[in-house]
Image 1 (cartoon, helix red, strand yellow):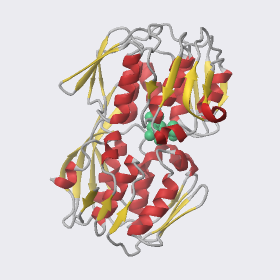
Image 2 (cartoon, protein in one colour):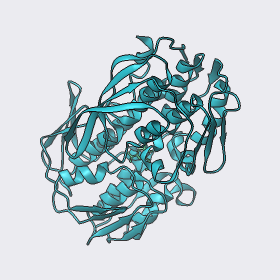
Image 3 (spheres, rainbow, N blue to C red):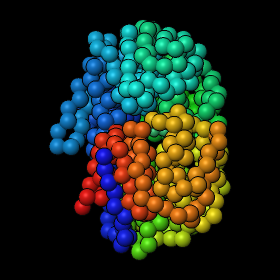
Image 4 (tube, rainbow, N blue to C red):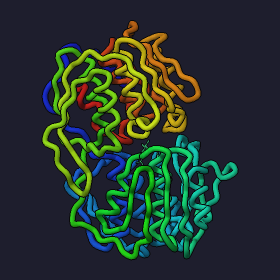
Length: 426
Ligand code: S3P
């Protein structure tokens, strides 16, 4: 249990956030397929990324952790070993789905498991395209849920695949398999989702062409590793402070070194449309990924309506944005967010259930939309996280900006932001 008290004097100074979760996963997976030691700086030592480290080690990759850095010595594109143990993805959808794509193309047998939440999350969306490529993957419950068994394969076929949902995890699973396919694989997304896999593989010498919503992946012969990968700060973790600094009076903060890849900055665009005062300072670039310091000052927010192409660019930030909307004037309507029902928890139901305890009659959802009535009265409340890290953090900032909150599970934040509560305890 964790009690968060109201913050009465605003947010000030500089905030340092942990490394990006999506980039950290990919840095370990992709370095594992090259053939020299890669140093990964600012790696996120969160439980999800450590699940990836554990799975890659079980496939024979030498990974050492020293002085908050991680060193991955790859085994080459064809050097992974058959794991003698079950690969446990824990709570991590990214570990599971991306590694299903990678192992689908290996000439060995692999079995995946995960925690209670991951065991319920949909897998058919990755199994379908991978099966079209010739992979053989079998799961429980008519191929829907974990555990999953991946059979050995020598060759995969290239496909042209039109994705029904914009999902970076599904896209990346296909991209990993496509590295081993017999010709060029083409993926078409309904809207662009995060493109860290494409950017990092390009930095490792793989030929990938992107235009609008289309990605072409050429089969790879070899991955050429850089000496070092610098992981930018995670904009999904910065989101809590971007929202909190905007809604608390007398705030002015700078969040240092935040990844501002354009496929991830939907939160900035939407907050600005709501009236937030946000500026990028000191923009830099490393390995194709842009970073910036983000300056945020208090503002008067107003409700807006958005959906469609914005959604994949801010999918993990919707719980935080719902908090911003509760402090905005007027109503906010967020459309096309049915995907929130299949995240670490059913976040649409959780927002309605738990956020309404803090601000009654403010949150409504239907199958695919979220409606937030801003400016209603807020109270102290006891809320459930359903062991979902992003719900725990969104509830915490909601309480901090309102009358305080008691959450039932603080440990779940270790998935993406192990030091999150240090901010409230200092
Ligand atoms: C992720 C993609 C998104 C996101 C998740 C991380 C990734 O999931 O919600 O937290 O690293 O590829 P979907 O691909 O299911 O939208």
